[in-house]
Image (cartoon, rainbow over all chains, first blue to last red):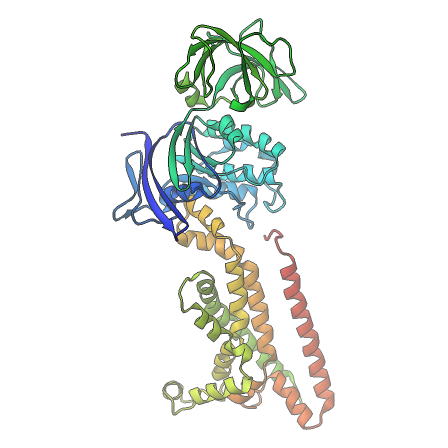
Length: 342
Length: 223
């Protein structure tokens, strides 16, 4: 049976908006659906979750029919997790009560690992009314994951948080989703979130899918030292060990311990290419790379790791170039997806 | 002349009416808050009628309805051997109708302030719509329920016109506090009128303060 979520959805909201989308999404890692606001991302997610009933929709999850002609499985029977854009915590229950709400109904006994991954242990007896924005998001995510969903839908889960809070939240999401091993569909308009989290990217604009986009460029690295909320990482060599030698280590906000591996998302606009060694600079790192492909994106080899950058340049295959990295978005390794890519 | 029978009767009337009102107002308030039916404004208007109709008009219609000549009044007379009008049961029915908006409107507004997403979240967490109603809607509407109970009780305590029309002025049977005050003034017994009025005033002030206090605790945690 195909390990995919297949759907074909057509619905309209008056004259102004219609959604027509059909695709097959692999159920591994995090799939991002990206597009401008008002493009139909939320509507698509709601239709998949069964919150938006559409008579003509066809949705199949691992072959099981969720929606079809004459078939409709209500949301509570789909075994999903859904993180809403706004705060939907239950105000009459405390943090522990919120987190156990779904777990009790799906007979999940233990969800300590989720609570730990999201660092909620100290908040369990607090009222959800006084939580900060970031804390409330973590509780909402924990509430979903604790119910052991078969797939997780995240609808702009960082909407309304400021920049610093967002960067704090991203590793939490990556770690918790990795911990729970749950395939996720993540809806956002932010390329930073995509670069950090997504294993694959699907575009959606004006109610139409615009196809799969190049996966975000990402390098595996190993944490070599930590101090005062900062970790130093070295990009892995071909053998999977931290490469020793010529490359400067990168200092990043702390999200993992010494010896643990992380993935470095490289936002495309923050990579500069040059044919000669640019020498010392204010950049985070300058990496030597070998060109391996020049058609359909620029393929390069960095310490044995392959990257495809959606860039073009007059670089011959086999030539040595330098990547100057201005910004890096780290995430913990999401276990099964990392192997898929290497 | 002792006012205690009147006080006791009033409290009984208010308590019974409040229980019945809550049983009616809970589903009615929920339906009004969630329905998309086109007839909703009509039902809202019917529910709110007792707010604008003079109590005498309402009382008059109820009196006519309860008379032994009508189906309802006749059936009651055959079943119990007593007329519905000028009985305690008649008073309860009149109170329930008269105080209906005070029970329904707090419930309706409490249910309608629950964000739709919050209930959807419950559904995605494995709760059926029925389960979500009992585990999320009801607890979140709790303050509306309390407000409805307090207002229904207090409003029934204070009613006069409808009671006089439907129940008359029978001591120990249909003579409630507000009518006792009326009687006292009629017979120039200002001492009794003062005493009863004063305590009714104090009671009403306490009740309203309680209601506003409950409402002020806006988002505070309950339980």
